[in-house]
Image (cartoon, rainbow, N blue to C red):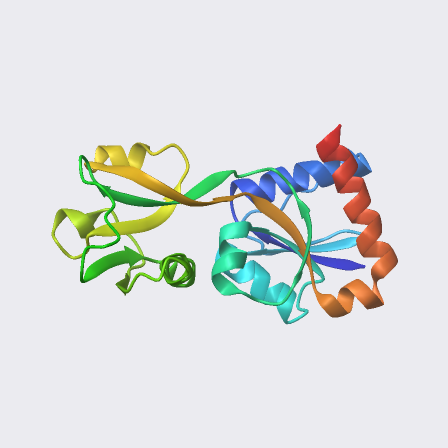
Amino acid sequence: MLTVALPKGRIAKETLEIFGKIFGDEFIFDDRKLILDTPKFRFLLVRNQDVATYVYHQAADIGVVGLDTLEEQGLDVIRLLDLQKGVCKVSIGMKKGEKLDLNKPDLKVASKMVNITKRYFEERAVSVEIIKLYGSIELAPLIGLADMIVDIVETGTTMKQNGLEVVEDIMTSSTYLIANKNSYVSKKDEVLDIYEKIEKVIKS
């Protein structure tokens, strides 16, 4: 049996639909339940930020999580397959009309994705102060807390509604099927079997 960690919400629903197509069955969590047991799989419903942690510590054999989360957390898991769902960008946003000037001294950047932000500016040899926020990040440039933000952008509507605009994209993200390294060895046949079946559905 494989244990599968899924992030709550749309991605879990879409992934379970893929499993449904593969096995000709319905995979649905009962109301408020966090575990779904089937003959071949045990599905766990967890927070998006926790999926890779469950997989890394082998509490789950495989999982589905956004590439942005994988890049931010840097946990040593196997990236098996790009599921091409939940596509979005990690972008820099500034007040409308402002330009990105990396030569400006004392730049301040607000983000919940501290590591991605740090890497981006380090690669450009730019010194910035990163301010970690957990939500309402768009506020930061509006009230002078930061010069810019680094955030997930799907349509850009939230930024626009708050008087910001995307000035540069850092990376494109989508959901990935990941595996625990030990599980990949000890349950290789099962892991590769589901990997191949999911890949077939995505490409069909």
